[in-house]
Image 1 (cartoon, rainbow, N blue to C red):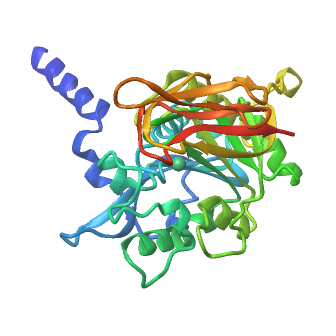
Image 2: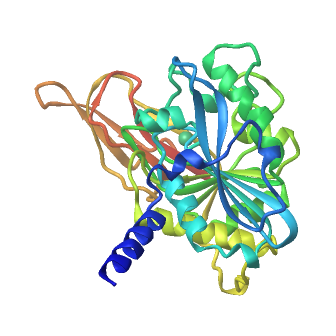
Length: 347
Ligand SMILES: [Zn+2]
């Protein structure tokens, strides 16, 4: 009897923890290979080229395949490898959604730039920002080939796309969405995330091939796409993760894919901004930012001061116009051109 219990216990252990079972996960080369016949949550590795040892570079894919037909909601996190809150949002969704009650499917990618997630870096291994070089190039350099594979193997699978970000190193962000508010679907998608701030903007780079983002590329493909920024880099922030999760649940309900949210009860507390820009330091020094995230500012209000190496105040900065603080620097040590605050200008 004891032996039986021991065997049962070890069986339980081996099924409770994934451990090396990850090696059994199927490797695919394109999201069009996902099994849409099997209702449930399935894990895949998507191959995105090979590393120095000619081993595949793999990106984790969580497919939640519903019981009935419906749209595909694509969720991408960490195209910037140090932006982790979105990874936890996708993990939380995968844990909570019952595929039998889902219409359509959710494709969650918790770590699109998996190479950089592993090395705590924002940019790709060749220091390129992957989110500025879409659609990539088939025969380009390392980052261009990687982005080309995102364009070819990932984006065509999505009917609606939400791309998760955070601030960069040395900065913090409010929770804010970027969307083209002249498009009603995108406006609703942004609202459903219940962010602090909604920043209106056509992706400036749509149509040009310089500095094109993934949002712009997806938009060009005709896929309704928004970007949401959830707080700070290289951390898990419970508030951001839960708010992000709630936003996706609202989205699923609105798309009639899952759940029934009472939209009458959803308050729109977001501040709408027509544009935004960073305020940079004119000269180097030790920066003290005196305003908080989401704080509304009046023109002329003091936002920061800068001290020299000896502690003397050498410069004070004020808001150049009325606005709201979307993001701010947390790094005191700055050369000229250091970022101070990301100022949103209200509609
Ligand atoms: Zn980002």
